Each structure stands twice: as C-alpha cells, then as structure tokens.
Length: 521
Image 1: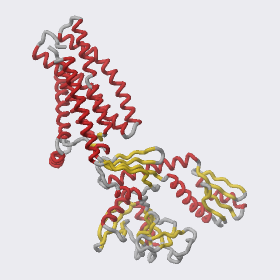
Image 2: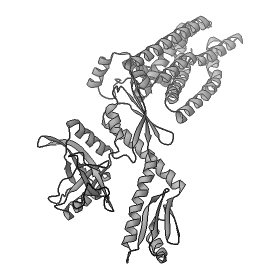
Image 3: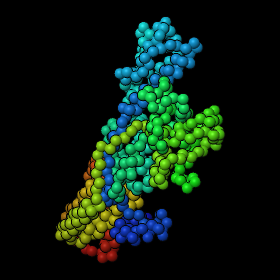
Image 4: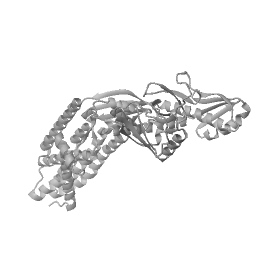
C-alpha cells in the first residue's frame, strides 16, 4: 500500500476543486456570467479571464508627451521670478532685455556696479540654476541633470493623469505603459470609438484663476508687461489677463457636473490652501472681472460681486451636458504637465479578436488531443492518469488567471499551448525512473516511491530554469512578451503541482484499490 498523508490528500482535493470551480465561468455564456456576477458575492467563483486588446477588440493609442515644453514653460516662469526678485530690492535694481534666449534666462543691468546686489537677489535660485555674470550681463541656465529630472517627473505625472482620466470614464482593464523617453502606449479593450478618449487626453486641462485688466485694449498687438491676451470660448472676444495666477487648479479636490437655472455648469471645491487663496483673491478684488482660464482660453469671466469663502464655486459657460461632464472629469483627474499628441491610432474589431480566440482554442484542442493520444500510446494506463492530471492542470491555469483578473492576450494563449505541450515532461521523468526501478527488480510500491523521490530534483531543476526565464520576461518585457510570460509562469507552477501531486494521488488510489502485481508501463 502506498501511504499518502491525509493533509496532502485534502490539500490536493481542495486545490483541484477550486480549480474546477473558478475556471468553470470561462466556459459559460456571457449572459450567465453576468447573472452570476449580479447575484453572487465577490468571493464566489463568478469571474472570467480578462481578454486583451488583440482578443476582445478595442483601441490602441500611442501618445507623445511634449516634455520639451515643460522646460520652456518653467523657464518662462523663471523670467517672472527674476523680474519679481529684482524689483523687490530696495532700491530697485534696474535691468533691460530680460527674456529667454538660447535656453537660458538673460538680462543686462543698467548699472553694472549693481552686479553683486543682483547676485544676492537671485541667491535663492542657485540650487536649480547655474548663474553666470560678466560686465552686468546675467545668464541663468539649467544643468543637464536638472532638465532630465524635470522631464522624467513630467512623464511620471503624465502617465498617472492619463490613467486617472481613463479610469474616470469607466473603461475596464486599460493597459497604460511608458515607451521610450516621451511616449505612452494606451490599449483600451472593448472600446470601439476612441474619439472621446482622444479628446480627453488631448486637453492639458490647466485651470487657473486670474484677474482681467479692464483698462488695457484687447485688440492691440501686444499686451502690457506681465499680462497676455487670451481668447474666450464663451463669447468669442479677447481678454487681457494678468500672467500672475491668483489661484491654480492644482488645489482642487473635487469637481462635479450639475445644473444651475436649467443650464449645465461645473461645480468645484478647493482644499484648505486653495480655499484661503480664493477667498483672499475675491475679497481684495470685489467688483473686478475674474477670468477662469483653461488651457490658455478664457471659459468664463464673471464679475466678483462679493468675497467667495468656503472654497467652493461654480464654472458657468456655454456647456452641453457632455462637455460639463468631461470638464468635471478633467479637473478631478488633474492637469497634464505638458500637451499630448496622438502619434498612432489603431482600432481592432471584435471580429478579429473572435478569430484569434477561435484559432487559439483550435490550436489548444489539437495540441491537447495529440498529447493525450501519445501518452496513452506510450504509457498505457499510467498515460491516462497523466492525461487526467493535465485536464486539472489546464483548469488550474484558467482559475488562477480568473482569480488574479489577469489579462489574456494572443501571446498568452501561445503560453498555454506551450504549457500543454510540455506539462507532461515531469511525468516522463517519473515514469521512466519507475521503469528503471522495475528492471532492477524492485516491488511495485518500491518502484513508484523511488520513481517520484529520485526524479524530484531533475523535475525541479528542469522547470526552474524555464521559470527564471519567464520571470525575467515578465519583469523586463512589455506588451506581448509580458502576456506570454504570465501564462508560462502560471503553467510551470501548475504543471509541477499536477505531475508531483495529482498524478501521484491518482496512482496511489489505483494501487491501494487494485494491489497490482506489476506496473503496466
């Protein structure tokens, strides 16, 4: 009699039962799965494997982030900082030709003798800029390391905000990955019309609140220093607004579409810092126009009739219900640090995905059939035992993919097909070792025990090298490579379990029930 500890029998039985239960929904119809998900708790086996873009159909977008503009905008802001710092000195430090030239902020002192005073006034900027001066001519430039650091930060922030905006639309299982230094790959399974997503991602959504200069002429060619002329999306006119930002959208904590007097509007709420700034700005400038600027366009310019305290307000304009919803979404998700351009767009139809699934299923069934027939032919009854374990192995793969809600792609199907082809390698090692022990004259039970114990190290070594390669592909690969690595990794683990545990349990039950005099190998 082959003795197998009770806890091992229970563990194997429970794992196999879980594998069957959690893989079963993948073979139900869509309507039945939706019914299960609606009427059963979340821990119940009601999830299916998520299908990737190539199997389910959807949209593929390759985006480019204008990281160079981040540096340009920062340097333009530095021009204002330099102007403010020099004017704040008592007495003021006179200068001319302040501006951005050749990637550096440059200006010339009217009195070169004030060079030391100017350096002292700009001392707080030494940590980020290399400041050089000669004969009263100053130059402030960023080091290469600082530029790269800002670009990396802009990319990280862009990826996070793209993810937030897409999540806010309710799109399921999006894939958002960095490609190179300034590109983002977005894959949206199940999305046939990417136009709304493109519109949402194409807007930087930088919201600022600034004062309007009502004394300046918006039709003139140039705005006064420290101001700029911006177009309005509300009435088509231009406004002269201060470059100085009274309150920025970065302090927003919430924004929601709503209705006011039957018209769609967007309500917003600031955090404590933003609420204080907004209250102070509206209290100091009662009676003046307060421009709400989105991506350098004035969407509304109401008159401040009274101080607005409490940190909440409403943006009104010529909104439709959809545009109000989209603006609220953009403000909640946050502003992109730089503009984004769509470099490549592809739409994969669901019909092509269905063809891929059918082709993968056909390949899997053919592979499974050939493996089953070969093993029965090569090992007889023990081949049938191995084939039964293989069925449980496949169920465990789909169960783990369903529980983890992993995304199955076409390369992932290739990984499953490869697993089916190699899953019985461990059984080959065990069975051949059992044959060798039988030829040496050992008993039935002794041959089986020796076959499993002696083949264990070879099985682990053979699978460990493949497992290491699969893990490295998952860690350093992307897209199709990662999808292949996921199913291959899961397949290796379940194959070892099925060969060493499930097959051995079946053989032990057979031996204990039949007590054979010889092994049919």
